[in-house]
Length: 141
Image (tube, rainbow, N blue to C red; front, side, top):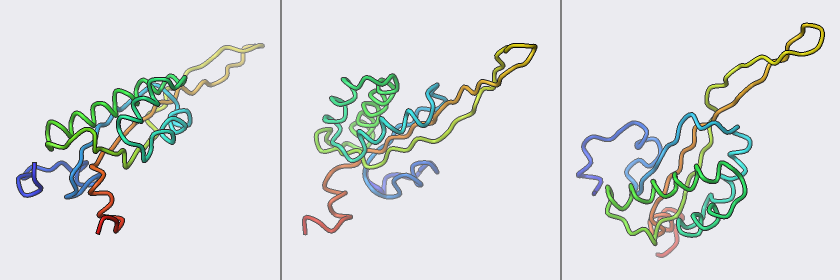
């Protein structure tokens, strides 16, 4: 879909991509701490989609499965909605934001209690075609 044909643009797409070609996927309220999620996000940031999927398939972290689904979804969105070729897509942005924290209490000795924080994350993956990234950087001229 061309930028001119997009008449109903969401605020999230405007913030993430603007008029650039590409697509994104968001997973909210993922029950993994943001600190653990950022370790996996750093593995795939800037990688080609196929390479990232291979990396995530064999990563031992539990959140790698969530990121695998997210990258696959973003690539599928780019193919379906934007008409882009999956083999040319690169992960340009991976953000991990903190979601709500559930507070729980654990009984301790002498009638005391400790607070347990069960954190969650909001994950966002943006994919764009490789040639548009090179154009922004000033390459391929």
